[in-house]
Image (tube, one colour):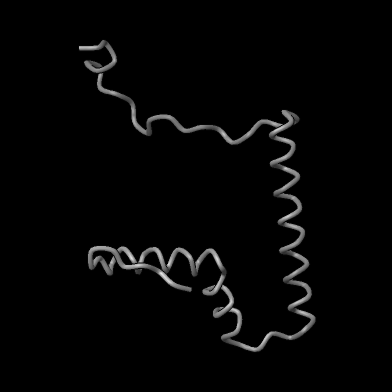
Length: 88
C-alpha cells in the first residue's frame, strides 16, 4: 500500500495511511492474532459477524423502503440564546 506525501506533509500522509489500514482491517486482524483462537471460537465469532452484517443490511433496506423509521437527525445540541431566537 502506498501513500503519496505532498508538500513534505508527512503528518497528513500518515493520517491517510492509518485510515486506509483501518478500512482494510489490518489493525483488527493484528489484534485477533495477538493470542491463539480456537477453531470453534473463530467459527462462532465469524457467525456472529455474519448475523450482524445481515441484520444491518436488512435494517438499511427497511429504512430505504420506508417500512421503519431511520435514526433521528440531531439538531443543535444546545438551545440558542433568546436574542438569537428573535433574530436580533
